[in-house]
Amino acid sequence: MLRDEGPLTPLAGCTDLYVALNFGTLKDRRFLNLRPLESLRAIHARRDTLTIGALATFTDLMRSPLVRRRLPMLAAAAREVGGVQIQNRGTLGGNVANASPAGDSLPVLAAADAVVVLQSAAGTRRVPFAAFYTGYRQTVRRPDELIVAFEIPAVRGRQWFRKVGTRAAQAISKVVMAGVRDRDRVRLAVGSVAPTVIRLPKTEATLAAGGSRDAAHRALADEIAPIDDIRSSSTYRRRVAENLLDRFMADTSRRPARRSAKREGG
Ligand SMILES: Cc1cc2nc3c(=O)[nH]c(=O)nc-3n(C[C@H](O)[C@H](O)[C@H](O)COP(=O)(O)OP(=O)(O)OC[C@H]3O[C@@H](n4cnc5c(N)ncnc54)[C@H](O)[C@@H]3O)c2cc1C
Image (tube, rainbow, N blue to C red; front, side, top):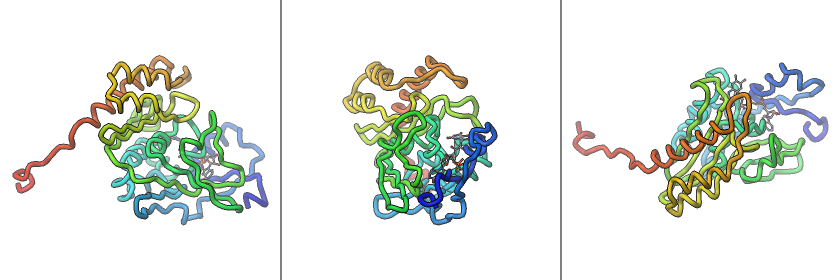
């Protein structure tokens, strides 16, 4: 239908589209309802790869034992999205396709080196998450393609997610960060501080080389480009990004609490 009857706007949970509809920016569009495509909602793992269907909702992600075990930072992000109603309807595919730099799942997928699986009548192609966004709300997805799934290779190390918004629910991120720390290797991605979600290669390299906190802050400052907008100021976002980086380093350097044999016995 996308090939033969287009242009059609795919519709999943409709939580972003409905807002746009109310703003009157979707006039004269025709829609393709993906909701009945149950097979695009599956979450499964084969060997090292976790595959999450594009129609998996945030509630599905929170409840999935596979996601909670293999990608707990995604379950943590899902818990922070909107309120219960939005979590029940909003999908991972919609969050990514909507391409807002404030999308909460985006830093997680970026830090996990996820792959976006795109499908059209012509075939399937796999795009590394780092190459999916080309600019503010721009992606490489063609109008005849659907996002059908995300493939996430095994993530080794400690995973971490933190969103800073105005309040605990129904708030869009002012800054959102996800990271993985595996001994010296650090992977960090941040949203709401640039036109797209970004990885922080210089900051990652500084931390991996054992650089000081100041050096890491300087690298971070070079890599982000926050703006002043209705939700926050650029200065505030810079400060919060630094604080999150410090928090990431502190939280991931702690050893997991060891339970003594005595306590376990008791
Ligand atoms: C009250 C409220 C609170 C919110 N809070 C948050 C929040 O805290 N964090 C956050 O990140 N977001 C939030 N959102 C935004 C929204 O809920 C999410 O972005 C959600 O993931 C969108 O998914 P959806 O399935 O509803 O997408 P839809 O609205 O159905 O679609 C969104 C866009 O993606 C396209 N699309 C959808 N699925 C596909 C697909 N499989 N292939 C190709 N294109 C596709 C659509 O054509 C459309 O352009 C909030 C929205 C509302 C209304």
